[in-house]
Image (tube, rainbow, N blue to C red; front, side, top):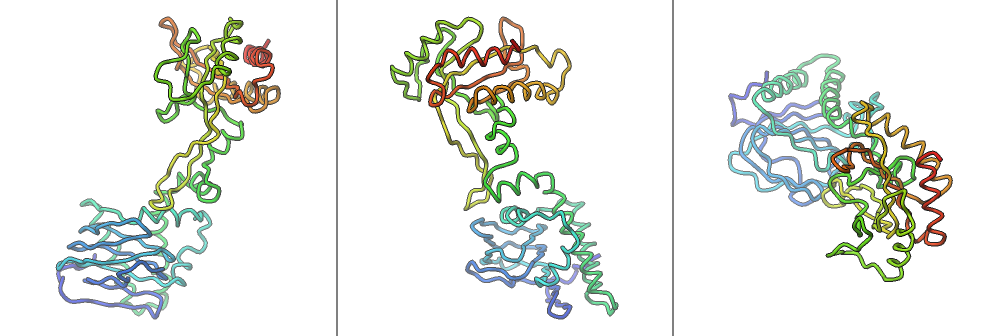
Amino acid sequence: MLDIKNRETLEIYVLGDDFKFYQNLKYLPLTSYPSNNQSALIIYCLGGKAKITVHEDVHWIQPEELIILLPGQFVSFSEPSEDFSTVTMVISTSLFSDALSGVPRFSPHFFFYMRSHYYYPQNERDVLRIYNYLGMIKDKVMSTDAYRRELIIHLLRYLYLELFNAYENKDLSAFLMAICQHSMFDLLRNAALIPFKFNADGQPNPVILTDDAGVLLPNNKFAVSSKVYDRFIRVFQKQEKVKMYLASGYCKYHGYDEGSMDVVEYHYNQHLGLLLIYELPDTVKQKVTEAEAYSTVWDIQMKLQHALPRSVVYYGQDTLKDGGTRYDELGVFLPLEHFADRLERHVETATKIVYGE
């Protein structure tokens, strides 16, 4: 275990130019202005506080906090308190690459993720583990073992794998967002390969603009021309098989904010259109899983895409309440930009497909 009784004397242990271990280091080997850091750093704060900026993310380092910085990040360090002290490991790009070699699961986006996920407060149990871990590394770098470089590589790999393990579940969507600014589900939804979920994430989509009688709702934020409303009401008055609303629907995608690297949702391709609502059997009551229900909905969606390309399908399991009875609901949104002509016929086509007529 790391001996931290001596908090005054700076201790430095090195492995050639590849690895440096500092105990009781106050001034981190970083500039006070943002610069491209060429080394990997692992920092454990023993006491005090200091300001660190990674890209544009500003953070005050606190006692018993672990900081992990990767090569290529723009980092600055400033304003250490009088009692600021750390255990710091500086790892060359060569040793860092060796630590990650043979680990094919690391995705390119892991490095984007680390721009805003570089500090980790430790609880009491974690502190003991950290002291044990740092003590093992210190012992190896001080030793004369013939394979001390390889042993240090394995100890570093352990830390990076633990870090990546916490991130790993998001890997595919994160990678897609980093490369093409869309998550996996964004790509599937916007390619009409899976349905949109009604009002996902608590945001109304589509936004209903009329009531059950076809009357425009008050305080409507969307401009509806008399021409559009007249076209809607003519079709509305002729339909009895399906609930119909004038609505505004949009597509969405997720990406990373350039400054904070937080995940941000973007809306685009917003259109006025007809929303057709169909009641389906309550799959929850029938003990059908959402995945099994989606399989049935997917079959309907594929038929709709074949007959009515550019229609949009929405689905909600056990979300529609009518007269005290709950139903699954399926929505077919027909953007007027694409379906204004022969609108009544398009409604009939959608209804026949949904009901299997």
